[in-house]
Image 1 (cartoon, rainbow, N blue to C red):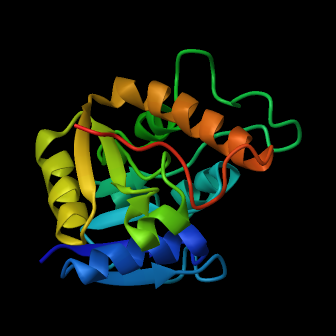
Image 2: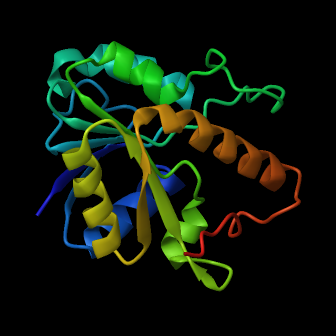
Length: 192
């Protein structure tokens, strides 16, 4: 059984935690107010927070994240304009996090799904698919297996370099939802 600590208590944190718990994983949560004071209990730490909160979490936990699998679910949007990402061109939030946490195994996942599609386990008539990118094969397999045990599909999307494309896809999906072109229970499905 894999143990997860989810930093965040919003709709995505609860959807991810519910999915993982349904698959038999142990899940604990750390709220915004508990960040830095509550210990990281899990082997896997999920950053289920807005991108601007990540730096504070890294500062609060620092070397406690060494050796852990750190899952970045953020989409680093400019939330004032919704017209760009706030990471350097060609980079990603996940790559920026990996640079700050060189002893952690950073994965990008869950940023191309909405909470509603994780909870329903469907996007329209298709199964929800979680795309996972990262450089550590064992870490990716651990997350893919935990997600699949919870009842949705998971696909290894490649190295951490693919986080750039996953964040572009997440950006597109969010702007479509904010523009009311798709619903918050909709999104992209992968048919294999």
